[in-house]
Amino acid sequence: MMSEIKKVDYIYVVDSNGTPLMPTSRLGMVRRWLKTGQAKWFGNSRNTIQFVRPVTTNTQELTLGVDAGFHLGLSVVGNNREYYVSESLRKSEKDRITSRRELRRTRRNRLRYRKARFNNRRRKDGWLAPSIQHRLDFTIKEIKRLYKFLPITNLVVEVTPFDNQKLLNPDIQGWQYQKGKMYGFKTIKDYLLARDNYRDALDGKQYPASQLRVHHLVQRKDGGSNQPDNLVLLSDINHNQANHNNGILAKLRENRQKTLDYRGAYFMSILATRLSNYFEHYTTTQGYLTANLRQKLRNNNRVLQKFYDAKYIDSRDGKQKAGKELSSGRTRRSQELNYDNLRQLRKEKVKKGRVSIRRGHYQLRPHDVVLNTRTNRIETVKGVQNSGTVIKFQTGKTCSIKSVVSLYHVNGILEKKMKNI
Image 1 (cartoon, helix red, strand yellow):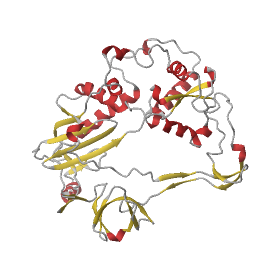
Image 2: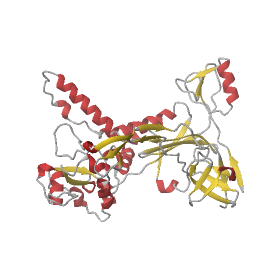
Image 3: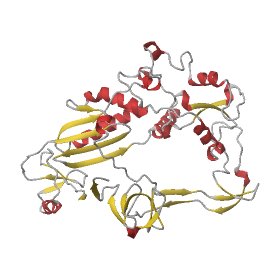
Image 4: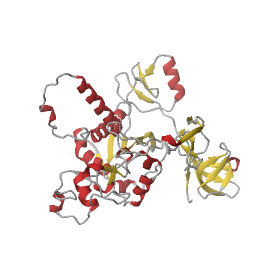
């Protein structure tokens, strides 16, 4: 048995004083209110209106559910309806913080004399790292933003404090919290030098400490941490751009043991302890309680913009190679290191590099659920081929788009509740 559940488009409403009212799905009435001057758009939004005339303020109870973490999920429900849903994917702030630091240092270098300051070197009580503080501010700002146009009465936050040390070692004792892996070492590099005995992680040779660099197996912007398990020592000869491009350093990362990502757990602990500073009344819940109750919708994460590198003829073997494979290998401008300059091996350019952006969207996308009318089976879409005319399933088989019926769309355009499947 299948019954269609169509997504409803809501327009959010506030009165003349800015008090939130119940959303409406009567889009025709909204157009007439705007046309006759009874209402206007609320701020810069085009999905919220504000009445100019007096109106009744009868509201119902709405519950805001927050799935906190590095991916922030928000959902407002009430009367067996979902009035609002969103998912925010926040990227790393490392690049922006690095750029801000470089600009700040540049401004300081322009000054002839800068008075010595010492008071601003002290961290205030409750200080957090800029990346964590930004994520905390963004989470609180997004939650408070919904209170401006929705009459929310209940706030439920899925948040749990974590013990990061216990995640790594379940049998940890009390005194071991103060003595971790790097106990007794001043810096991370000192610990790595003692751990690896001054040896390069690629060739295994010993080098002086001045010629060894600390390398992140997983970059910071990709979710890597400064934990010793994510760090290795590489010499100036091997730590170059060529080894990044040809995949040697990527293979080194695959061969290493995968470590736990503590960023999400750390942020959840911070949010659990500081949520009371922003909201007086709220209810907390755990993920295992809501895992079986929620239906997670995932958008298509494919990147529509693709970069095609230029192609050159390699003078050594006469084969075509990408520009990044025949690069200069230089990674820093502050000092000249002994890098292998492969740029001089470019003989002639065969193909010019370009950036391609696909503007069109196909009717079906990955993770959609369809009914194959030929086999009378329900399949999951893996992708599309031949300009959207052929559907490829998760099983590897293909079928014409004319022979399938859409049952579930990842973007919420069409949903069908399926039972006994």
